[in-house]
Image (cartoon, rainbow, N blue to C red; front, side, top):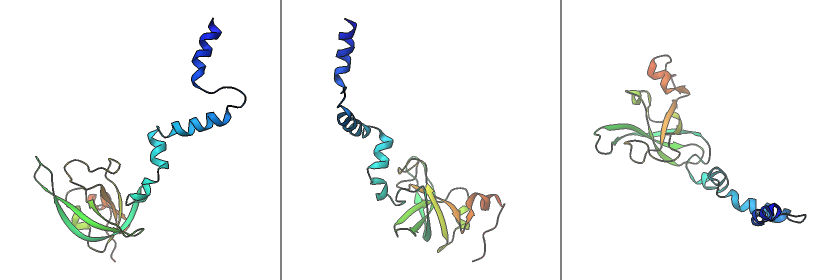
Length: 152
């Protein structure tokens, strides 16, 4: 009786000497249900501005002020950056109070994601990236006064 129950349970998955192909194909189909596998193998990561990488360098095109979403009322300091690797223009948030003063037009900046994997964060409409470095110097170090921006 026990052998019959275990046999009924095993009916859903292929078993036997020649079941290798069936098992491999079934596993290939089922892997697409795993979100991490799907994200890394679909090829859609190449469609985003960073083309699958975590950070990218770019040149500042202009400084812009972005109005915060309701119910907040503020002008968030942002910059338009043209990426070096593919020429795409993206809007990037400049964090911390007064850090926009360290960023000038035509500066080379390092840009990273803002934290929600391709989604806008908080009250910033449509802004998915942030500035991390300016002219090879960390923006946080400039803000804290630990380093100076190099003369170019």
